[in-house]
Image (cartoon, rainbow over all chains, first blue to last red; front, side, top):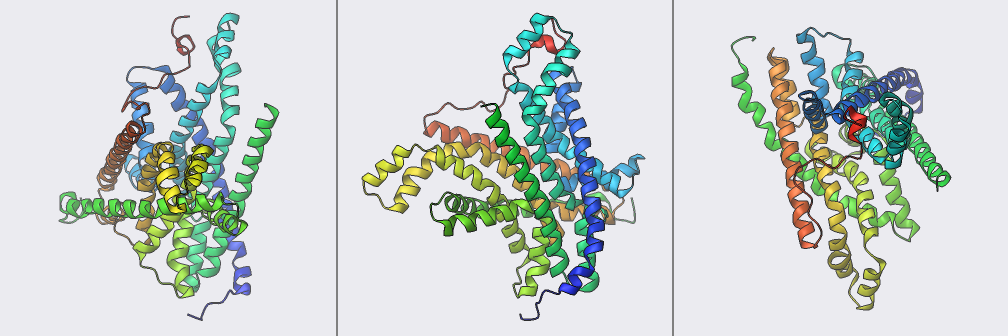
Length: 222
Length: 241
C-alpha cells in the first residue's frame, strides 16, 4: 500500500492535545505510585506482624491482586465500586486501581528489603534496648527502603507504561487522546507513533537513570 | 436484573472465554521463548551487527507501553499494507514484549553455564547446533525455570489486553456481558476468580516443572508450599524480648 506518508503538519497540530493527555498520564503515575508505596508498606507490616485473621487475609489479598490482570481489576473498580456506593471520578478510579494493583508488588519489594537488613542490625538494636517503634522507623525501614529504591523506581516506570490501560475506563490520558484523534481524523499513524515515542523517551530515560544510580550505589559500597 | 436475561443465561458465553485466554497465553509463550533465546544470543554476541539490533528490539519493546504496541500493530500496520488478524497481532506483540524481558533471564541462565563446558564441547568438535542445544541450553534451563513460572502468570494476566483488539477472551466477554446486564459485580467477580484460579494452576504447574528439572539435574528440590524463613526477629513484631 502506497497511501502511507508521515504528515508533519498533522503531527505538529496534535502535539498540544497529546501533551494534555501526557500530563494526565504523569499525574496518574505519580499519585498511583504514592498510593502503592503507602498501601504496600501497610500490607508488608501486616503480613510480618502475624495477627490472627488479618495477616492471612492480607496474604490472600496480595496474592489475589498479583494473580489477576490489571485490566480486569480496573473494570472491577470502575463498574462495581459505584454499586457499593463508592462513586469516584474516572481518573480517581484509575489512580486507586493502579495504586492497589502495584501495592501488592510493592509489598513484595519491601518484604525483600526488610529481609535483606543484616542480622547484626537487629541484634545491635536489641542490645541498645531501643523501643520497637524506633527500631523499625529509625533503623530497619530506612535501610530496607534504601536497598529497594531502584526496584521501586522500576515499578514507577512499569506503572507509567501501564497507565495506558486507564484509557479503557474513560480516562483521557495519552493513549486515549491518541486513539480519539486517530478515530476522528482516520489517521492513526502519527498519534499512535508519537504516543509510543513519548512513553519510550520517558521510560527509557528513567530506566537508564535508575540503572546508573544502582551501579553508582554498588561502586560506593563496594 | 435487566430484561429477561439473567447471568445464568450468559454463563456459558463467559466461560467460553477460558479456552480463548488459555490459547492466547500458550501461543504468546510459544513466541516468547524463541524470541527470548534469539535476543539473548544476539545481545551476548561478539558481532555488533547482531548485538545492536537485539538491543534495539529489547529496548523498544521494554521501553514503550504494551497497549500502545498492540494498538500500533492493530491500527497502524495496515497503513503499511500489513494486515494482521487480531489474534496474530496480539500474540506477536505479547510474545515480543515478554520475550524482550525474558531474554535477560535466558542470558543470565546461559552465563551461569561454566565456560569450561563450552570449551570442552568445542574441543570435542561438536557442531554449533549440538553444542547449544545439547550441552549449553540443558545446563542453563534449571536456572530459568523459576522465572519461567513467573513469566507464565504474567503472560496470563497480560493476555487480557487482547480483548481491546476484538479477541473474545475472558476480559472481552466480561466487559460485554457486564454492559448488557446490570450485574457487573457478579460478572467481574466470576471472571477475576477464574483468572486467579488459572494463575494458581499455572504457578503450581511451574513448581512441579521446577521440581522435575531439579531432580533430573540432581539439585535440591524446593518445597511446593511453605513459609520461607524470615530474618525478622520475633521481638521486633511485638513478641517477647
